[in-house]
Image (cartoon, rainbow, N blue to C red):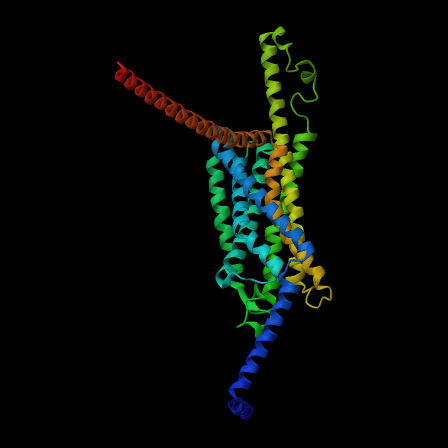
Length: 415
């Protein structure tokens, strides 16, 4: 209290000129500090420009690709299958996280600052974790559906109605179990002395009451949203592969397939033989189609596992074991986290590419969508050209009529 009074007395003893000098010097110090912060922290470094380009590329591919997936399934009724419904749900979650979360993540990774306020600090991470949960639960439902359809077709009949109900349950469960993430996220400043001067170095991070809570939460989060579903899906696809590739498929290795090829020789056989041939061919086509679908879904699962592995491991190391609290190589840790964040969004962009290369139906519909857009643009240009041509024709006709009227008047005057 005494020191405060002394400070106030000394402050009142200063002249106005001295106060102005002090204020100017303080402004200069703050200006120098802000320039230093901009140069060292905010202005993108060389590798960060590469990161910016990579983020923009992922944003465009993910937005266009996943929108095309939704459009292709919605537009074509023969693609309204159970697996495609789940794929559309996966694409919708990817579009959501791409639009809402990717721009904020890019800004934070480059500037190390949260500029978007306390409300979005709760909303954006919450939506991001919902997207993770929706993705992994959707992939689990796809694996379960394929497992029943191929390994135990008589135990469970999957329908579009059940798929829609499952999708609703997936979103409700994801929204509920991720509520703690929204509650604990808060904004804070790494440099409290700069709180009233600038929003730089404001971070959006978790604030738990006790140290044990984040350890329990992130351990459960890792098990529920990554490790356990991944193990179950791997087991399911192992059984699916064994059923489709290693067990004897009707006609695949028997005399029927060698004798009853789907060829022109079929008309020479009797009616019964032709029926048997068509049955075997239908079975072979069905198995081939199932193999293609299973191959595509396994690639989607592998890419998901690889893209989410780094951030899952880093989060467990940071939140559960506290590995990075006293690290000396801060730049290296920051680079790993930045790359792992980018991988999450890269997974959203990778799925449509996988569908395009491994699914003939999706590839065909993607081409049709692009050709439809190009055709529409060409039709628009043709219509504009025809409109201009008709306008020019009308103008020339009106000019000719005017000239004819003038000639008739002149001839009448001469007569």
